[in-house]
Picture 1: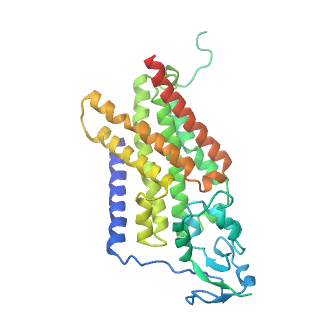
Picture 2: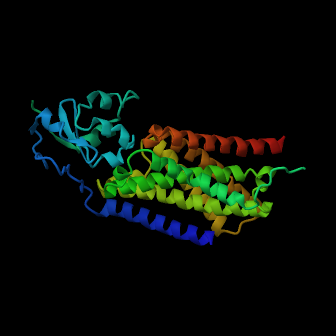
Picture 3: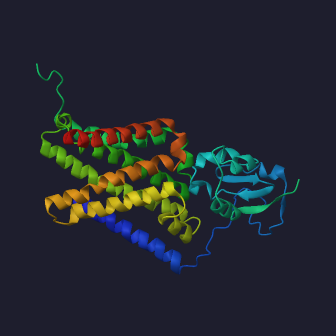
Length: 130
Length: 210
């Protein structure tokens, strides 16, 4: 009985891992979800020089619609919250706010890696313009 | 007179089940449930957390009962049943821990297949690597347990690698950070179970050699 359950779980695990690894190799690796937000008027901002008012950022202040500012740049991290390795609850308090100090010091616990910086860049939506 | 407190003979099964799934209750009590299941990405993240937390609790309990202390036999009909419980819960632990990275990887699919694949592979994050190494050792060791017919001494040798898997899993649990760090009751519960497992299991090994 236990052996059967373990066998089924192992099969599912192996098939799922092979599928994900295979998909990563064979399916377009550049498939990255663009930053999206349901409540904002400033969505799908592709222009890297887009200026966003600080007052607009403060409107995106929930876990379901989360923007924040780091070093004068605005990021829409709504889709990133669930996958943040430091936990969701460490990001959510900064939604709609300036998170520069928290990001630079990893909430007072050190420094983010270059990899973290690169991930953050994927969520960039524009610069603070007022 | 020798045994003033009567312990029901099958209570061991219930005690291990309740203690293994207690993290589920602690997890549900902390934070908004509506948020934790508000979109598909968060559902996968939450399921990944639940399977990991319950799996780690069960792993600790399996280690504790595998110390084969006479005291634990009081909770089972016989030492044979204690062994059976160890076997059953050991298998279930593997199942829970197999689904832990799978659900979290599904969560990463919201970014890309590449992100999900990178999550499943070792990288620069050592806390994550400990989890990957621990699970890999556990899978190999339990494949020997469930699917091979080795000589007892050889089997015992392969089974000993589960001690290593537990140490890696323990390190992974407390170094990975995340929401576990912010849920103090859950953190304390898993820490106590893990330390108890290390003390009782390794303590009994050392004690039996002296």
